[in-house]
Image (cartoon, rainbow, N blue to C red; front, side):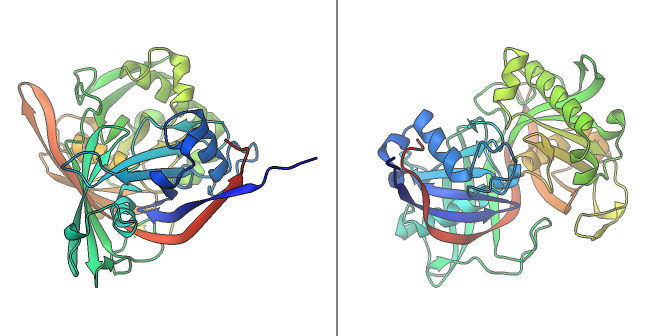
Length: 393
């Protein structure tokens, strides 16, 4: 019996923030995968090692978590005021689909450095020493991101002393600006028109919820209303099948209420968005690293789920949602943070703390946010080629 040989595709394996993913230049993909469609999805699924009924992704580049089952496709931007077009694919671990419905804020930190190293940014925009300002078009949601990438001797600087909770080793700081991050695809930052809604979830209960579309569509609920304290680590949630099922039901009804889906069963095919997060007032806890977080170290506590599991730290896009909601008096996030006006917030997550800034204002009765700012880091882990069977897509 004849067997199809493997093909090799240029790729770079990168960490961005608290996530990892396989990065491609669009032009390096097989021609059939250079356009959206079934062939592209099949290729990325095979690269990552999905679907995997064992939930391990042993036969691929994925790390069997939502944070490490990611792909990025980059190209020189067709927009005159941007340098690079950035497309993000969240690969399901156990199901055969790639979710293109949102951005990855963590991997956004790696986009600028990859783009510079891959020659996607005009060399005239890269200083010999200093900071390169890379203008990124986030194609999934139609938004701009500005990455400030440190440059030393004409090359991207990856090493440094910037520490990020959830990442073991220090690296160079990359500041990200998420421009006009609210209401991807148009519409209101608050799809229901309310800062707080009563979210009815049949079979579960009715909860006070802030439903916000900023950074990524997110459902915020008070931790105590769900029976939690806000100090939980991954094991407390991810080892509890009933809790995970409850959160998925909440997510589905929240998606329906936000107008992201028209029918409840569509939520299963939109795993990446919306996110579900629960918030609480500051309290002492021990992070997953063993680091002691004191109530006085943070403004509030936040725990968030991604792709059906509690995230080990915090998704970058959800951090934008947290920062934006914290800046708007009357949201559950703002109330958990003390109910005062603020343009920056430091929150506690399972791995430690994170600070994010955002300035919100009302224009013609609608809430808007000019930009949200936070710092991450990024590093190339491996570069060369990925191999996949030639008949995999």
